[in-house]
Image (tube, rainbow, N blue to C red; front, side, top):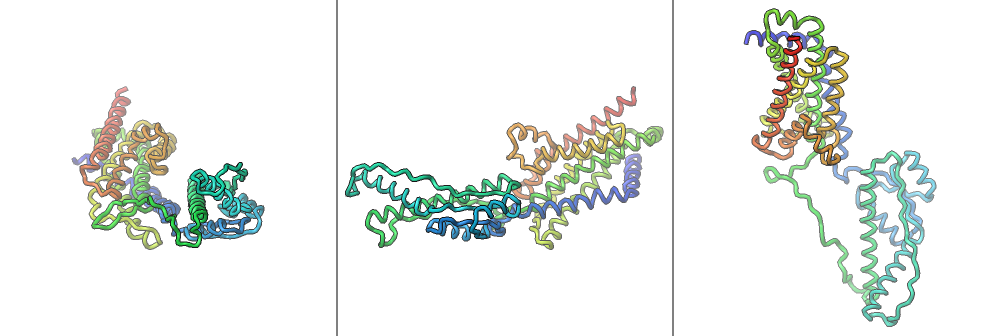
Length: 422
């Protein structure tokens, strides 16, 4: 125990003498968390919180275009900017000045009414409800197109969302026109509406509840655990560099002359860097709890969750430390340890779902993501933050993180022993 304490004290001295390294370990992850959450916060807000400017060119000037404009305005998602020229709208969008332009074609209302009347008359004639039941050759009515212009830099998810919303809006207008045409053909034009055009089937999202209140996920609940894990695993860079430096400076040779086992040296580093990980996690939580609400971001709710959160942070830190110890043992120079460690963290973060959710990855990548310790830690954090689970439900991820630490540390000890034996 005395040797372990001496090794731990040595690591603490080395760490405290490197103020730049401490700043990188603690300040940079906080800045990263704040910036990413500010950037991504809008994607977690309701649509009514954001209005997207939309250029609209109305060449129809009829009932259908009026309904389209009213529907767009009532959705509270778009700020309508009407223009007279399709050319001006197209140039503004393609130049990146606006995200979207909608062009309503000429005679859209007239064409739609003709098509609806034609279909309704055809149906009624088959039932003998029309005076002239002889089938008359139908006139071909060309299809009308509502043209959409998107900024070339617009993401596909935004395009799909807008297209689906407008398609749903147009479909509703067509259905209402059909019902109105039927009512007119039946001689009930001036009577009360006999068709209910409101949707019969509706969708309702059922959210998890706590104390009879719905729990609505927000950007902070997603970003705090994700970027905390990224910061925790990034300590493999300074940890591995520290190990390589001690080997190159001959510190290990002097330690082994005492003698001190390699496991004791690694134990001291594990204790110090585990403390660093927990401090990082504490700072991240404090930012999420106190700073985020002060700058207009949603805060994180940790009431009743702190013990489980610190357990996940503890074992995630152990997994990161084990990886750093193994990398530092194998690497021969700092030039090998630093870029490889940084690149490895980025790869593990990408696989673990820190940047892109695992469920949107291809099937093969979803399977590969299961080998990332960041994925295990992130799932455990999400289980606690968003799913309100008990300890038994995060135990599989905890055991995987612990096993990862034990295996990587054991490999580091075996590799060091075999190298020295030669």
